[in-house]
Amino acid sequence: MTAEDHKQRWLFTSDQIRSAPSIRESFTYDHEQSARKFSAKFIADIGQSLRHRASILAINCAKVFLHRYFMSECVDLQDKQQHKVIAITCLFVACKSEECLRPLKEFVWAWNFLEFDSKSRDGVFGRFSGEDPNRKPWEIDENCDLFKDCCGWILTQEERLLCTLQFDFTVDYPHSSIPRCVRFFERVKREKETRSLLIGSEGADNFSEFGNTIIGTAQAMVNDTMSTVACIQYAAWMIAAACTCLSLRMQGFKVQSVDKWRKLWNEECGAEQDVRMRGCGLGKDEFEGWPLIGVRSSTVF
Image (cartoon, rainbow, N blue to C red; front, side):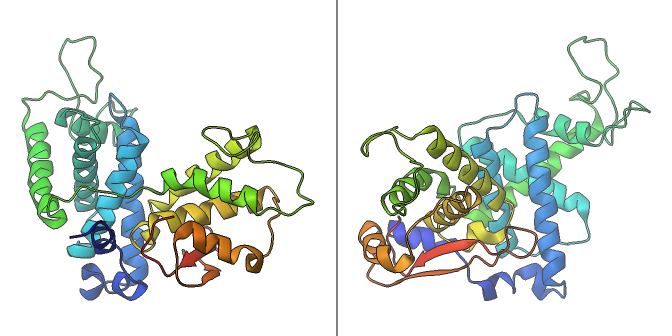
């Protein structure tokens, strides 16, 4: 399998997404999308609640694994408990694949923490009642039955996830393409645009303060896309271009009309086809009207 075939393997069309296994089992598209968002948010919450927090990279990786799982397996969309187990397992596996290892017990404790009642001082899996002063109330004893049950759920789900992913842990992240997109738009800005995205001539790590602001905003938007199906619908560089465009538009940065830099864009991308601007189609709740630059090309920007 070539590198491009590998990337295309986990990209799906809108029709494919709308006919995911759970939807074919009589659930609506909106219901299925709601379940994805709930699970993606739970991944982020767990990642931030671990005793040693998961990296943003691992959290984003887990969200991609989640969307891939939803495209391959039928999930009971009414079972929130199942959603949570799937979400935690995706993060557990992602932490391994992104070299952000965390012990299984921290995932159980983080889950208990998120559902811990501060008034009753009790969690869904109980509370720690030992004498260790370094243990929080939600960090239950590893020998209790509920802890063992929770570990069993995660490990069982891990086997299913690994089979679904076919042990393919590769994720193409948009973040690395954003700086190149910013450099490109510096070259095609309008003459009357006085702000600069770069300091001096093109080179490594020479972004201006304004350029770094654009990059930071675009990267934050990319992180948000991981909670949507955009990460399994569009190539990573396309998402990077869309986020960069929107970040520039938010700052009122003026670039030339697309007709003036279409050829240059194609040269940068190695594209043989035309460039077109179109909406990203992420829905009203996620950046409606995104400018997405697309080329019919197998070459990553």
